[in-house]
Image 1 (spheres, rainbow, N blue to C red):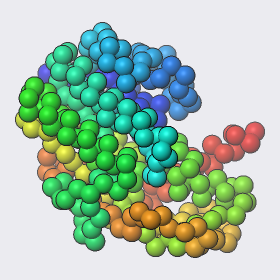
Image 2 (cartoon, one colour):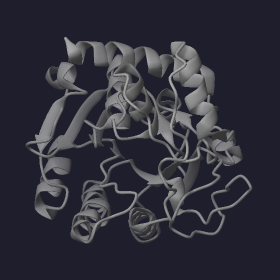
Image 3 (cartoon, rainbow, N blue to C red):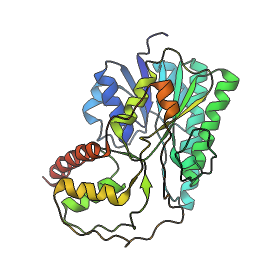
Image 4 (tube, helix red, strand yellow):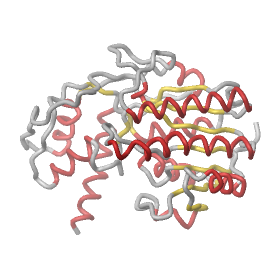
Length: 318
């Protein structure tokens, strides 16, 4: 297979996308990104002079086509998304436009420019909840509107592979965590409040999730670039550890790392109606085809995450 040197990334200024860019640049790839004109680039400000930046709206078919035809990427990593665990009515159009229309525009541009591979990013929330490890061919039952739009995007990938021979891959990510995550997510929320000595309101914490460290997720994207050949059909891969850990255990580990005895207000927040009580990835397919294995344990991942946020919040105070 030819060398894949030119890579175009959407969602590059997001949590996972920013980590992916750092990795690709260290490995010597030529990287371009598509971002909204006024989007916040704080995660990648130190990299902007090393990459090609296109300000474009993924919902604009012409703009997307223009960028792809001009940059001529070998591979597109599509990580841009509009996420809401529980959407508001006014968010419906934005979510569909970003997650479905944006993906369709990228697929169409990829087809026209005959790129080698289109990599779509989806979620474990597309699955019907199960007490067993989830396999790629398990029944789908979207948790929320966000997951429904991800299913539509996956189906679009299948269509473009079957009808136009565009090589496509989808990663279904299990709960990511790590440095530079969104502060509203569980681990940054707990850390921020611990550092600021504020009360921490939590649910019962009995949910058990497959927390997956961001570097392992980035490794999966990177593995695709060294495949001897791309799949002939739209392939879907679970990206998780296969080990579910309770929220209570994660928070307890964070307290132990910091050496704090601060009280936690367990049960002070009610569970959501669509609460996920258990999720864990069956990664057999991912290991066999991509030769990908998660390397970072939950203990090591939390240690690295706590260290990063400790420095981050200290700088914010200064």
